[in-house]
Length: 285
Length: 342
Image (cartoon, rainbow over all chains, first blue to last red; front, side, top):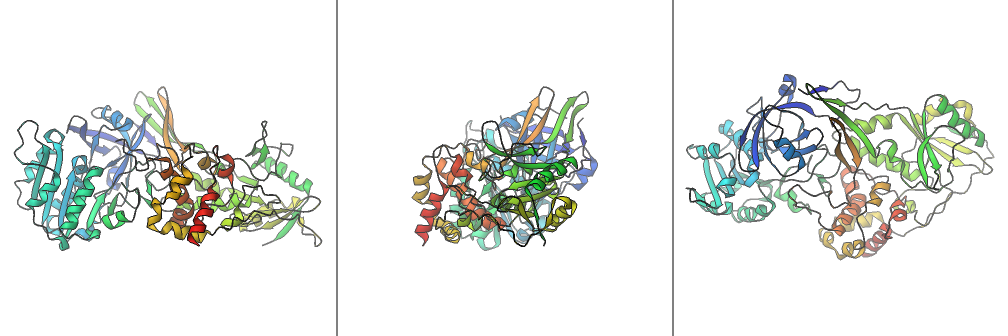
């Protein structure tokens, strides 16, 4: 058990809180979904996030890295983190094992402007690991279903092995209060019964009312260009396209400058930017 | 605000008095290889270099140390114990820094206090008194007057000392903290003598640049891809020296340093000139080439600081020019951009 001595003279903004892995499920070869909970119930109570925010995850001796929160604030108590082994910290985190204790601080970032989005249709477009931050928004909207009009989910991955939250998302197909469109770029063993193609191909299966819809998109850098082209083609205004962007981050609190893009800080002003913001920010992706 | 004076002897007595009260005194000293640095001094017998144009590194280290432990951990039988670092922050006097460096502290303070507050910085700043000494000499790299500052500038200092002809200093209080400092050390100060004559203030080369025009040029989107960046920054080797000596550069990294079953997390200076600075774990790097990184630093000084913090990002200390191993001179870019915008 980690014992954190928090009674520091200074209010040290870099000190993580003690957290425990309470469950983990394999998603793909290199990606796991972890359910985590703060050790101290007061921390559980105090933690309040918006969809689209992130946390700084801490493995002592290895370091910290930013991870999107993959669960909705409507499911209070535990926090889901969908983590791909991509670098030293995520690798070390995967190796911690069941019931391990680690450090976490946050939530950080602006999150989705849900108050503004409510009352509109919601289009979620995700590619690969980009589903992780959008899962928070997805379940926020489904748990507050009456606050949104039509909800459409478009999710594409390289192949069925890279598909995240498989059972959960497949089960959404049977719900009639959300249109669920799923695609794989390559059906590697003939087992895929859905669409084979790119996420942009899914636009052919949806009718979109661009003026009354917010589109939230997240995926690998290459995906943005093509999805945004589609959205603009469908008549979306730049302010209704919400992108979740990633940068290398260290402090998470607008000091260390690693994530700055021009005078914007991805950790404070982002990671959610409108396309309107993005076209005015150079080197953003 | 009051104006007093202190003799040469009183000036050195002040150093001893402060030390005897337990106050940390940081002042320019010449080390064994002849380099001038701002260091903790313990007696008036130290090897001072108050007449040196400027120290090699900026005194930002006093509030924003190059390496600063933020927490320590130890793996025990019951798991990992983590403890926040509680640095002992002593009353400190920065004695004899230059007005440009004092001005830079205002910009740094803004960074560490906007939105979240970095108490590690602010607690140090709160316990410090900044005493600048006006410059009587400038070198060929100094350009403070070209970016809106002056060799006897008052921004950011609690007290400004100006050298009196024949010895001693005129001491002008600029803040309440400065007044209190004089009151608390009244034995060293005396009333200003009417006939006092100051040493002439340094003449700093005027580059003929206009930072408003530079900002205006940077604001134009098309100039982001201007060939000036490649032309000027092609020779940059990415050593990051400019960022480490700069008084307003504030990038840092948080790094774990394990030693067996225990270790610490350290806030280390970092620099936007390093290739790993924006490198994602995926291998993607939004600033892949050195000229892009140099462009970023230039933007940070003349556009980002004013846009985000409404402060100046460059105080004209000239250190980045002095330290650069390939003679990459930021003023060349300033001059060229001013010419293009005029």
